[in-house]
Length: 266
Image (cartoon, rainbow, N blue to C red; front, side):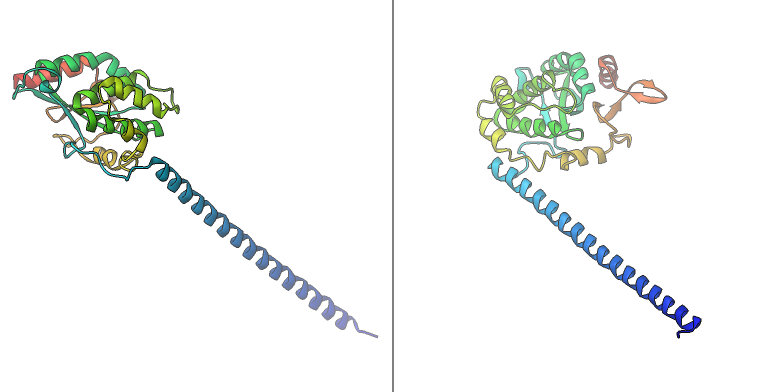
């Protein structure tokens, strides 16, 4: 007959064996879980690569950067581009805009006509540095605008971008490729269709792509860096609107006019 000590030892051994089986089962589950996670990550990576490859293949054209821009990725619009007379003393005004930015749309509605008039008069020389940091529409419109610029020059680019802002979709919305083609043709860039459909600037114009990163990293003449759009520099210095909650506000037409007048007086 087994003693109490023998029974206790058997119970303890049984308990140890049970715990060991539980530990082994837990290790097995962990290994299986890790394997499943690894497989899922691989599938996601492969799917992402496949999607990008499919998009690039559908785009057709090889990726490249736009031609004819300034060293700061800008489009310069001067009096001679719009039928005016060149003025070597024109005040240099730089505009940073994102095509998906509602404030930029409002800014263009208020100041756009004045900008065009002053460029033609030779009062200012405008440099537009479009960026894409908000949505996919920012990227798509930026890429299309470069096609228009290459095909039709600065005047066509300016007309096209004004149309883009007028037709800016609601937040998160998009325009069809055909919409960009139609606006390009209306602006005079009748040969931009293949470029818009081929999307050669898709990498350059991507959200937070090279021109956008460069814009946010490049300070103005006083060391102030870009913090959002629209941003306007007059003679290389940021123009601010009235303060809002202690922070510089978005400049309006009156702010830009005052800055240009001050630059002319210097």
